[in-house]
Image 1: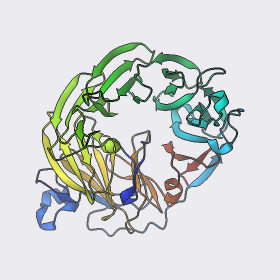
Image 2 (image 1 turned 120 degrees about the vertical axis):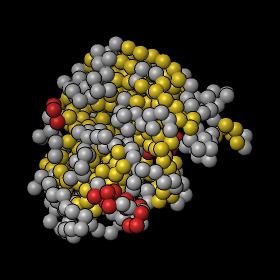
Image 3 (image 1 turned 135 degrees about the vertical axis):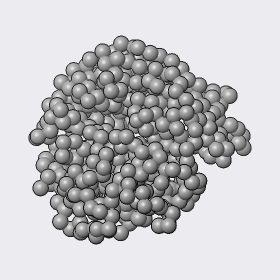
Image 4 (image 1 turned 180 degrees about the horizontal axis):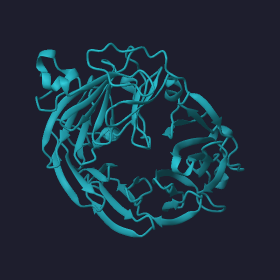
Length: 464
């Protein structure tokens, strides 16, 4: 599943992913491209598999080989464009108020899900505001783009949506959270036939609480509700773990701010907010903790005293598959990067370019650096593969993990789907600009799906 994008306006950077060019401290986590040639041993050099991304199924090249041109790559081919997916309603008077906010491909079911949001027109006499929405989930046929079914969350005479979240299971089940105008928080389970499996109420305090959803490997669902901080500056997060059947199997509360859920682990900031200049602000030197899906603390770690982790960087904090964590702290010209072991020990700290893109991989993480035009694959303490991408550095780039666990690197003029274990090319396209101009994207079964300005979905094939 594609991850949420955020924009750091100071650097014109668009970043996606679950998650450097200079070391702050030496360690055995060798970043060969960041060190002078004299600093890298022959053993370290030989352990890095380097090749050029040149096209579909590109073979590995030795480090001394010259990179090939990208001019022979295939363009994306438009397979179909769906109809406008808005649901007709007298409450939605303008087509521009309808848009696709999430796309998810389900190759096993030959379906493509589109979560459609429609802004309700401002009608004071009817107590309707622009903050109210009619949200729906639609399933499109993978081969034709035709709508197979629609599930509307707004029922006639019922409350409207204020905001919602979705998470998708491998078997085609959709979990959807809805914050309704009547003050209720509802979690829905909808199967691949568009039928409601069950719905559950979630706890909340003031209607402004933050909810994150994450599907576990057994298709169960973890819902985390973060309440606002109290008069002591302490956040409280409630965890609810439901089986796929809807049975609640665990509920607990943690005194801390929810950072993210990833790889069946939960990353929390346990430090209270502090008063600065008469207002509440984020504390320096946060104490972090990793929990499992049942709220059991696995370990804690302490950030250095000078660090500050703002919540607009939460998408850049990465929990690896074994539960170890990589923390990224925003800087003005360079970001800081920290790696912690399963015992909470700080293994290394580095400087990383602010335009570097990071994404989780099957066993570690991948880093794309525009200045050197290289993408590198790491486990926590070593680099295991590297690819060179021909061409000048480009702005407006992204690196994300796809729903099937591959890596999607998108540049202005090209796009690549890469094997997450060795960075070998699975697909390559010269149509990167098409993907970068689409805010919503999903990859599945050799195709990429984007939302268009009309409120529909477009299927792009990466095959010739």
